[in-house]
Image (cartoon, rainbow, N blue to C red; front, top):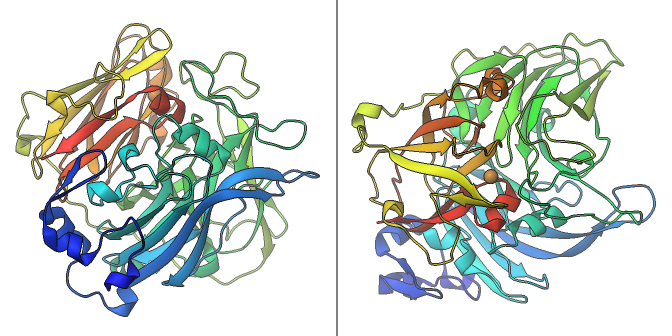
Length: 500
Ligand SMILES: [Cu+2]
């Protein structure tokens, strides 16, 4: 990429040639990782170039007064354009191996960063809170898309302000496509749709009513999809690829169809599964994505099929919340409005997935134990609270080493489900165990947990231990792992991770 393609605050080719250098806050970057940012000369169709601005905006959501939001505004300079949905940011579509170049400007009245959730990018491009962009500041993100085809997203990650900024409206979707997936004949164009699910509360003037709550987190009074309170989508008698992102701060969904047809899952966080799964419901915790093969061919013209979240037992339900965690809610409707011809069939094999094996882990007999615990109203991760520069000995991980990590949500009487997220390379779930006496929670969700495939976020239920196999294959530097309950993250249920 040409030097002039990079804005202030970004990396210039001269910086890259200097080799190892320091950025504000002491983040060390090696040439090894940067070589992955700029590798050869990209062809024109491999370059997606975007201007992205975080700024106060306003959108009509409820009848009457518009809602003041903080939102991402995107302008494509090259690449593939895609529309925005309400207050949510643009939906970016990029090709795997493409170079994404984002000129980011912060027009908010406070610091922010952009985190590319699920993407394996160099540490300095990951939106770590240490890289905060001040009001009026700019940052040039530039990285190559190494991840599989799939549904990813981007959101703020500033120190102790992530929950607030996401609640104000800051989130966008990034879809990666690749030729292998394109060869499967999955629905495309108008039959490939993206939905961002977020619960929200409004005050009497139609403005966001947000409070971080106590130890539990934020639970809105109603569920919005793509920024709409009663989203009605028109479909035909055809198959649709429906991509769902849970962009909520705290709320977990148990997604199911109102007419009892199965949830046919074709992809999770990091793209296609090896084979489709047909389930009565699918769990979606904050940060997670799932893609559904929705077959409306047998639905009579004019009929409505609703997407709902069914009841489950999450442990803590939110005390006096209007819509408690784990309660039934209606989410959106699909109305069949036209007859279409669609003869496609669900592929029995979707992708090839290399499976990590426990016996190949360097610490197979000695898993890294990561407790989720609580002191008063304060949640801890790895026995500690977050500090911008804190690192513990077991948070230093050699690059390229396959390791087994065991998250334990079984300390004391902390009856709560947590979505855990690792930045950097994707991982695989090895297994989970439930302590005696805690089955009442897991039993209400277990059929809908997608444990196979590549993950970046997973739900851990009360009284559970989850083992994952992880390998940070590509980049060294400072990353994060944390609870994706955003109020938990902001209160310090997050830790640094140094890949060395
Ligand atoms: Cu949590």
